[in-house]
Image 1 (spheres, rainbow, N blue to C red):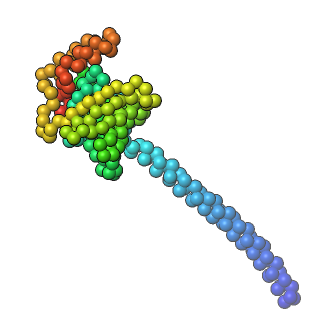
Image 2 (image 1 turned 90 degrees about the vertical axis):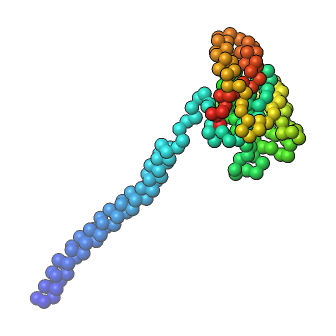
Length: 217
């Protein structure tokens, strides 16, 4: 009788043990699913972080380019590029001993073009971009003892070389006459619908009438 009760007790406990094991298996499966979900969370977090970075990224460059305050205190060079007058602001990069960067602006149209490259001794080699993204030209020149720089500006494929000759403007020296620049700009505006040659000639009259650069980079 006692043995029968013992066997019945064991029989009762067996289902409970099986149920317990099934419960443990279910719990373990749930734990594994949770772990899998947790494993995906970093990926989702990364995706969200990447999206946040994109939202926090600097806005796209606005065209046409405008003079940048970053270059406003850089040394200025005034002179000619081909038949047109320009003022260039060119200074050293903070993260590259031989690196230089800056911009130049046309006197006749006010168009701004970014430049960046290297100065090795008296040799200047820079690239330009009129949209802040694509390279639109190459400059190769030489600095003289008086600080002036001259050479050629070429297209990306080194075609169509145009001579440039730029002389330094002393610190604090005013850019060419402020009264001339507006006249040149308005004349250039009237010539916009015609060929580019007249615009270049009218823009050449002020010889760097670029007082508008005083507020530029």
